[in-house]
Length: 166
Image 1 (cartoon, rainbow, N blue to C red):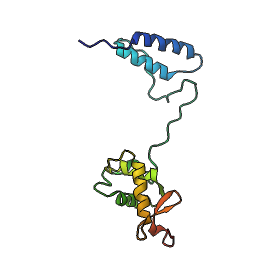
Image 2 (image 1 turned 180 degrees about the horizontal axis):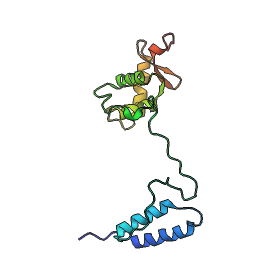
Image 3 (image 1 turned 60 degrees about the vertical axis):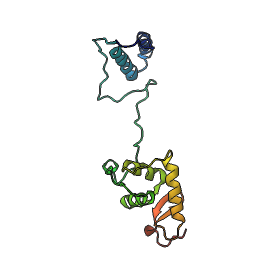
Image 4 (image 1 turned 90 degrees about the horizontal axis):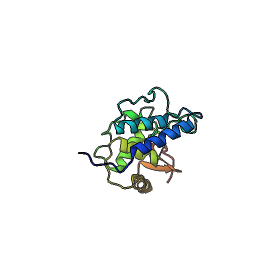
């Protein structure tokens, strides 16, 4: 036998339906309809008639159009999704960053590099990989013979700027 839930779903359902009735005149309220449908499924109601259209974009409670969030990763020649998940396997942080910069062939921020390395399967145990990466890149760029250089807040390869001094 299943233990009794501490949440009174019938009360939640009544509240959501009241909010839907209150907001229905103002907007389509797809989010409320989806929530009501989910609660009805939890309660085991057989007739769950409110299932939002998959093709329609979600609406907000204010009635404003839904604006999707920006992509998580920077574009990599338009092919960030195609970055192999083992692209940086068994590489040091500096080696992986150099490889990524060679792949994209342009200056990148620490954030962009960190996201790409993680996406490319770079293994780390850092609690804050961004800070760790910045420290490695900064330390690396201080060496005169380093391939990595810092240009304002971006990282690049020395071969792209042969006349640039540290």
